[in-house]
Amino acid sequence: MSTGRDGNLGGPTEKCGVVGASLAGRDAARPLYYSLYALQHRGQESAGIVTHDGFQQHDHVSMGLVGDAFDEADIDGLKGSAGIGHVRYPTAGSVDKSCAQPFTVSFKSGSLALSHNGNLVNSDEIRDELAGKGHAFTSDGDTEVIAHDLARNLLEEDLIRAVKRTMNRIHGSYSLAIMHDDTVLGVRDPEGNRPLVIGKVDEGYVIASESAAIDTIDGELVRDVRPGELVVLQDDGEGYDSYQLVEREQTAHCFFEHVYFARPDSVIDGSLVYEVRRELGRKLWEESGIESDVVMPVPDSGRAFASGYAEAAQEDGSDVEFAEGMMKNRYVGRTFIMPTQDERERAVRLKLNPIKSTVEGRTVTIIDDSIVRGTTSTQLVQLLKDCGAEEVHMRIGAPPIIAPCHMGINMATREELIASDKSVEEIRDAIAADSLAYLSKEAIAESLAVQQGDLCLGCVTGEYPYDIEDEETDRDVSRPVIAGSSD
Image (cartoon, rainbow, N blue to C red; front, side, top):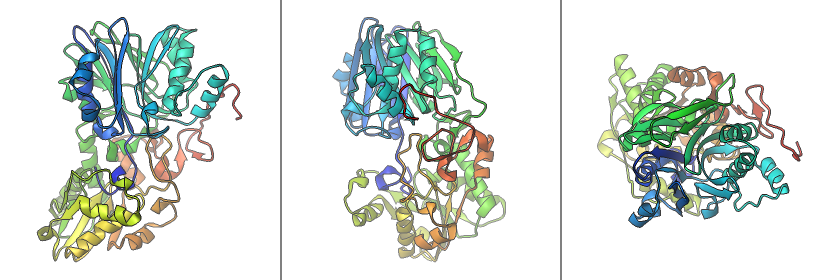
């Protein structure tokens, strides 16, 4: 992760990761456990697995990293060939075990477990309605709202119709791994904001937030779950059934998955993330390349951008050298808990150390994925100048972030975002760089081979693909009317 904006240094933090498996002839727990390891970058606060053995549910959910949340006995106790799992970074709800997932509900029609990646914008309205009908909630997270709504619908409808009814009531971003008794389902929101893929393994099929999880268990990527699609994994491991429950004219894929959040070895919406980042780097050179002696990434997510940038520069006849000019200390803890600004700034020096021989007496271009508050970028520029760099130019592989994310990324408020009230030149002056340039929205769309109107660009435009209170929309959209809502 790039220290330019990761959660450790006060920038946007990871979303969540979900996984589900239906296998024939073997327990699902261990493949789920390995898959969660592969998705650990998407959340480090809690991890959990729920399985079903055909008679009853088994669950283990704990705070902390995957390796800390489970031991051998925990895995052995999770019996059954069907199961779902989750790693969480809180974007809605508290940071405690009450909001850890998968979330489970037992009711008249059986058992239900649910893992959620994303964020609803109308969960309070649905919660108030359900509470008025006697539903008792144990957490303040939106995942429990989805679980209760689906459980209520399952009392009146079959599984497919119940899921569709819930999808028509919830508004926001979601990829869901659901288990009803021993049936595993995957659901992706109608705008496709959050990624979800289908994979095949020897014993059956899996769903996961990213294809890297499927690779980890020696599986084969089949395809992305389509926006608005329900996928039901067959319990004999022989296949899956598909139901297109909701359709929209436009999608709203999160461009930040490709810029930062997803693993570079994952394939999302048909594109290998690493190659997308390299192409974004090439576009960055085309739009705002500047001659310098060396171009270097801010580790880790800046690496592919810098590689593409340097390659495009060299193809244009530039003598720029690509180099790893900053080394990352991977054993520094979660420094965002440091209580003072001075300590948070010191954390940059704990995490990154320049290589003096690469920097001293040279002009340097550093490539990062984004600038959020600007504090880290200021420190990076100063580090390199203290190390003897003659000039420090900064290039960013995304447009300026001017607005918060409401779709599941724990991003800063408008007041904290440096680009919300400053021009690029004012930001350059604030971070003391010799030059600064961002990538355009057009380059993002071109690199992803999609129309801008099919992306969620809310954090860089201030206009969102969902009906969010006090925010502008980028399309004709309105949230569902919920009985008893004040809207």
